[in-house]
Figure (cartoon, helix red, strand yellow):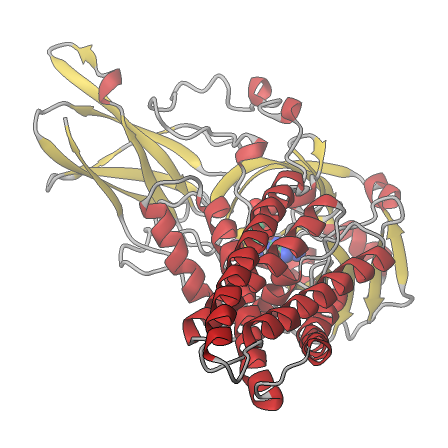
Length: 539
Ligand SMILES: Nc1nc2c(c(=O)[nH]1)N[C@H]1C(S)=C(S)[C@@H](COP(=O)(O)O)O[C@H]1N2
Ligand SMILES: [Mo]
């Protein structure tokens, strides 16, 4: 590359080539289901880098996108994660090309021949591509293409990319060292080449990204007909306390249930036909249980509210649905742990894991191996075919996509605990104002009342009382709707005597045993958010 090739040109060409590479890989993932190394690399980083590092970046993006009010937190967080993954990959690829250009310029000086350039480009393709392929091979859980096809495609793309980089180097460095006139002809030539490169790379990037996005197999959205199937039969349907208009649905439509997991590209693929749950470790004899066998045990159904420990005060990472499965006590009986066994390490298809004490299972029959949600077999994104429910704990303690239960002799840290989150992750009591329903104002004698309402939840500990404060007034008791179960949120409402002006509404709750909600404000990390939720409204 002649001295006349500016740094800007080098960087521009590198970014163009890196973007085209990424788009081609993305297109393959969408069209034929080959791995997308950008997501795999990010999954690797997420699993190996210190917990806070990526979270910081993702949080930043989530906050930004949230500020623009673009949709539910879980979707935004996943999008932010994917954008970061793509950004990191493009950056790495571009930097690799820049480095390659700089080295090639030294090695070949001004006499770069076409063959040398292409060969050295191949070396670049291999040096960058092989580790990426290794990462995908060991980590990718979502690819649907045959491994041979995946290998061939991804290898071909990296080879093609290396050759393109080599050729670009050749064209940009083809400087005639002598005649002035030829030098200007070379400059023209180089400019034309850059325009061609730009056009080709932009086309590949746009078409590839479009194809990939269009054909990406987005994890099975729950079937339409499952939405609200239970609404008619909710156990508290005839309760006298009706939710204030604008309160969130008491029973979350399945397609709106929040979703959080560590997988950038989507849920891990599990062959349901041949699935077995492995029982290993300190048991009389290792076992494999089929789904039929598990579903043969006495079934139980529980209405359950689950929340992510990352749910911010009044956030949307909390939902309620009907969980169906069998008590873990049956599994324990079948597994026959040896006397040394004290805990089960629950392992999942995506590398996630958590640990539950045998004592918890023995003392609480509601700890449940779950295979259905909302009267439908668990859908892909919520953990098909098996997930566990452990009452009173945040979602981080409850693996989805369970593949193995290993009986172990002592407690161990689970996936998020190793990354600095709460060892116990017992849910914090929370109460939220969903609505100040001015449009539903009604007359009551000589007063006008405005329904105010929302939810309160304290895991399996239950809520005994919810109180509302308007401005600096007294805390007044709200009405409670009977909950769907002792583990779901409670819908509360307070019909507030209207006074014009701007007002601040605050809510707090008290658990069944009289414990008050923690009022001190704390963020989600490491133990879950606390604090009083309040909203200001001009009425
Ligand atoms: N295998 C696996 N299980 C998992 C997770 C995960 O990343 N992988 N995330 C956990 C977290 S942090 C939460 S909050 C819940 C969310 O369950 P949902 O996505 O079905 O709502 O799943 C838990 N179980
Ligand atoms: Mo979570």
